[in-house]
Image (tube, rainbow, N blue to C red; front, side):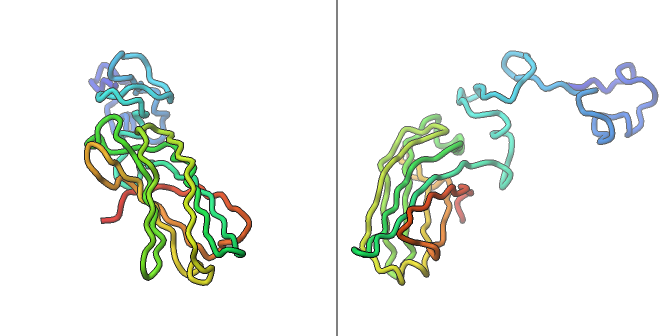
Length: 191
């Protein structure tokens, strides 16, 4: 909060003395307050106006600047039986639009982008910033077929209505019998 009346600032009111001056530290004229209690805010999470515990910093960002969270998955290919093992571990720092409600049911839908796509879906969990899924999906597919495709994940709400809130993908070129762990950045769903 800043008072820009002449009595509040020493000297003249030129642009260099305003709160937009990048040469002076911002804390000279501005203090950040939590809108609910008028206590100086911190970086910890606190309730926003809808009662959600997500950080206000996350909520105020828009478009591509906003952090949608990350998805942790493990992949393994078992050559002896020609199977791919996909384990959806968990979503971390997940956020969703306020239109989805405070605690929507959330699932992860996976798609192997083969000529005839292979779809799978995790069970739905109650929405929170960190959701553990710990579910493994196994498909019998030849390695040559997999190395030319992508594995796409769509983060979806099931309640109050079905909606894709984010997505991420991974190329399967490096697929091997050695189990690999991947952290994928979730981005806004493509139109």
